[in-house]
Every structure is written in structure tokens, then in C-alpha cells.
Amino acid sequence: MTETDLWLQKLQDEDSKVKEGAVYALGELGDTSAVEPLIIMLEDPSSDVRKSAAVALGWLKDIRAVDPLLNYLKKAQTSEFSSITYALSELKDKKAVEPLIQIALGSDSQQIRKPCIRALGKLNDKRAIIPFLEILSNKEARDFHIFTNETLDRMLDDEGIKTLIQAFDCSNDAVKWIASRKIRELSEKSYEPLIQAIKEGSGDIRKHSIITIAEMKEIKDIAFLNQFIEDETLKYYIAIAFGKRGNTRALEILIAGLTHLSAWVREHSALALGIIKERKAFDALIIALKDTEREVRAAAAFALGELKDEKAIDPLIQAMISEKGEDWYTKGAFVRETIAKALGEIGGHASKPLLAIFEESKDWNLRFIAAVALASMKNHVGINYLVRGLLQGTLFLQYACRRIIKELVKENKISPEILKKHQWSFRWE
Image 1 (spheres, one colour):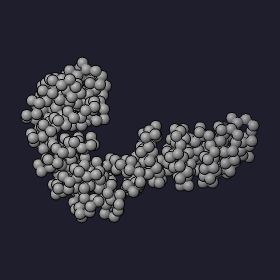
Image 2 (image 1 turned 120 degrees about the horizontal axis):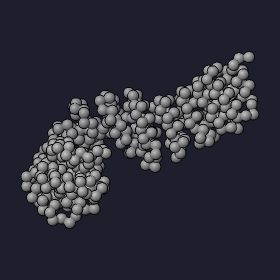
Image 3 (image 1 turned 45 degrees about the vertical axis):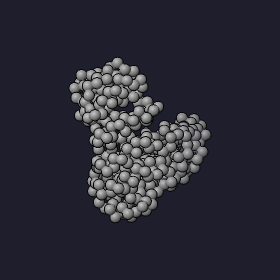
């Protein structure tokens, strides 16, 4: 009698612990003659025996176990999913991909969802990429975002990048933007597939491929986009791509883009105009300071700062005052901060009205932003206020001052000696 036979006999024992030990032993022996008896163990009354049988079948790597494991998956208890999905990932049969995707998308249990995501990652089937993007776009699935993101990253080889680009054809806008962000993170690696998608694709695949290239800072050579500049659907996205590389050939389109229906086009047209620093855009950017979307207002302020025209001082200060209800610690505070930094870029006559706001305003949020602007101009009043806030302010003010000081040091607006002098204030970052 072989060792396999001895362990197979123990599968008939009434003690579930004995059966569990026998199941693991059979899996470790690697004898595929145990596959059918182990499949029978998937129906055992004991959950521990069923789980160990699934794991052992994964070790044996015999495809006869795939269908029984998938059937077990349909009726499994929550605690059993980890063992079943492990086995399916070891068997590497693509038949398991669609059922695992459906469970990963449909369950709200971490004990069920995470093992399915892990198994899909190990199977490395690109059909899982777009479902992973759907999970990342679902705010109710935040518990799974980090885990899903890490699994997705491991799947993004050359084939995975092409699948990401196909996500641009998805009806879910959030999925498109997440795919675009992931592709930008891959930078040079994703550039050639994007070019191919623009040349050979159509509709949203082409449009969002251009948008993604427009937001990629490292890419310089985009002359091939010239052939699409007359396309009414694409011209604004192409103009933005050119503008963000300092190319003025699409200046008029960018200026027109400031009134486009799409907030993304308005925002990025303004950012591109700031990069090319073209004086012709001044009046349109002043109007954009009153846009309904905060991101567009901030982009217009940035661009005006880059133009360094003192005629923008009064409109910028009025815009800064108009940003009511936007505390510096809320999402909208970056509009005021961007305006402050724009005033700092312009410098000159801006210091006088800013000092008046700082000294006279009862709105402490506005005083803080005025101090940021003054510090951006290397004005000691603003710098001293930020340092005092760093040392003596409330917890929120300390955080804001710490962040702004670090940014201004990085931009060479204030001396790095401040960081050394108050090093203890930055110790936990």
C-alpha cells in the first residue's frame, strides 16, 4: 500500500481534524490520483475540511478541479473564499476569470472581494483591468481601493497598457479619468501605445488618448497631432497639448477654449496659456477669473501670474476677496492660494493693497492668503506671519503655514534657513 493510499483511507475517518490533516498530506504528496477524492471533500460537512481540500487541489494543479471549485464558489461561506480563490489562481485556468470578476464587482465584503481581486491579479488576465478601474471609481468601495490599485499596477505590462487605453471607450467617465491617470503614471512606457491609439482609434479612445498626452509633462514630441488640428471634436485637446509644451501655434484655439462647455477644456486652456505666456490672452483670462468652476478660476489666476502684468493686480485681489466661504483648509482654498502666488509672481505694486488687506481685514482666512502672497514676494511681513502661525497658531493654521513654507522654500521664494531654524516643526512629516 502506497503512502497516498494510507492518507486516502483517512479521508473516511469521522474526525474532521484527521480528515483535514489527510487532505493537506495528499496535497503535499503531489499525487494526482488523489484529485477525485479531494474533489469529493469539497462537499464535506466540515468547513475546515472543505477549505483544506480546495488548497490541496490548488497544490496539485490539476484542471479537473476547476469546475468543482467554481461550483463550490457559488455556495461558499464568506470564510471559505480565500482558500477557493487561492486554488483557482494556482490552477491558472481562464475559466475562473469571469466568475471572479462578477464577485469582485458585486460583493461588499472584504473577506470575499479581496481574495477575488488577489486571484485575478495572479491570473493576470487583462479582462480584469477595466473591472478594477470600476472598483477604483466607486466611492462606496474605498476599503478596496489601495489593494485594487496595487494589484492593477502589477498587471500593467505592454498588453495591460493597451487594455487601459481601451477603457477610454467605457461609458463611465470616472473610469476614463482613472485610466488616464494610470497611463500618465507610466509615462514613457505608455507613449507609443497612446500614439498608436490616436492614429488608429476613433471616438473617445482617440479623444482621451490626446487628453492623456496633453497632461504628460515628460513628453515633448507631439508634432504628429498636427494632422488632427482641424477636427472640431479634437482641436481643443490638441491645442492644450501644444500649449503645455510652450507652443503658440494654437493660441487662438486656447483663448476660445476659455469659454468651452467643458470645464476641463477651460481649465487646461488657461494652464496652457500660462505656460506659453502670451499677452494676447490677458483679457480672456481676466474674464475666466469669474468662471463658475473653482479649478478654472485657479488656472486663470496661475496664467495671469505667469504673464506678470501689473494690470492684473486689481482683478486678482478682487477675485481673492470674492472667494467667500472658502476657508484655507477646505477644497476651495487652493483658488485663493493660487491667486496669492500669482500676485507674488507679479510683485511690484501688488504689495501695497495686500498689506492693506493684511492689516485691516477682519477675515482671518483673507489675512492668511494676503500673507502667503506677501511671502511669495519675499516680503518680511508675510514671512513673519507664516513663521508665527507655524509656532503659535491653531493646529489648522500650523499645518497650513508648514505646507506653504515648504512650498515657498522649494520655489526659492524664501530662504531654506527657515526650515533649519524651525526644524522641529517639520519633524513628523
